[in-house]
Length: 233
Ligand code: C5P
Figure 1 (spheres, rainbow, N blue to C red):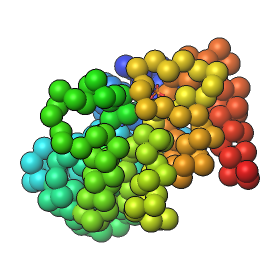
Figure 2 (cartoon, rainbow, N blue to C red):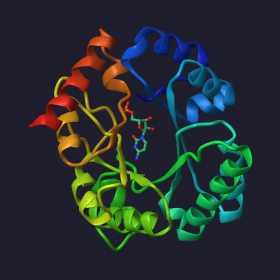
Figure 3 (tube, rainbow, N blue to C red):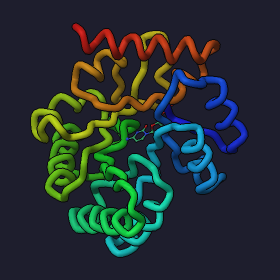
């Protein structure tokens, strides 16, 4: 569940409202820039898992040092942009391992953003990449794997090809999830929870279909039921 809020107060209110229904939260730039590490500590105190979605991209040295500092927060998953390159990803991974060893904590998993799920062909074409989005996503996923990362963030529509290319233990975290009863908003390469699971997603990131729902717990339960149903089909 994506905690896309400008204040900790709103985020905490939602976490309290959802209670045990949601166990894994994604903290993105908006909330982290507003609240800092305190919001992560709060979620950990509530017994929640945390995906810190800060999408780091800078020179390898800066990313490695930043990831080492973030490792202190005790989150479960962190991420970088794959287009930062193999050196940036590999050095980032090493920095996390070393920091976790020093702190005697489990190393958070590092995953790479391939291409943002809000990208469509109209947004993609002016960037001048030679490959179509789908092919570029696969190449970046393979690069992330070769660089030692645990998985990728990608569109649920690309999950099947990534699963085939990167093997069964590769994490595929997919935003752009839209149940049939929710609005698409600014997401382009979207899929229903059931399609995403069938395509091989390991984690679904859902924001507005829950935050904009009239009955949020009901929305969570409907999505969870659809995910579970897809596993048994
Ligand atoms: O509200 P919605 O369900 O679209 O939220 C999706 C979440 O996933 C947002 O927090 C967004 O920043 C994030 N995200 C994304 N596409 C990516 C990576 C992260 O939509 N490639």
